[in-house]
Image 1 (cartoon, rainbow, N blue to C red):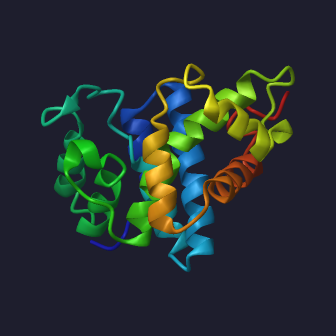
Image 2: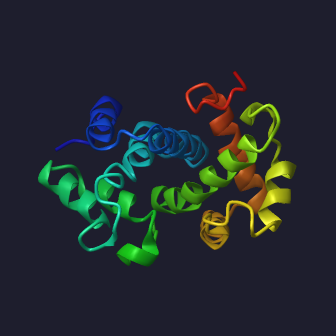
Length: 192
């Protein structure tokens, strides 16, 4: 089967995911993946699809491991006949679980951006404006150092992913932040 379209990926995401925050996370990761595809001469549409569906089955199968996320997602994608490169890309966002070491630029990017989007959202939400448009790289770096802030974000994964991509951490944060700012309204983070 050819690589699925964004519309097909969006339908799959919405079939399995109803939590608005999980949908917003998918959109944030999609935007970051598209930004990195442009930067690294990747296929913007393909990388975006990987970002959009990387957690598509998490709400329905939240247990991490062989019977749950992300293994159940890979099983569903294989049943649909979706390309193995896409499935590997999705699994690369969680190498500690899947054992899939990110190798391609797309795989490195999904690993690098996934957790970072959560931290950036958290930084936006503690601002009086609740707007990502007011967030700067320096704001994210300041909260980065506070390990109690957004404690669920694995900063080690973000650092390792940025290193795999050969991008300094501040620059990496800037790429992801700018991508998310472009869709601030969709993320509910435009201050309105």
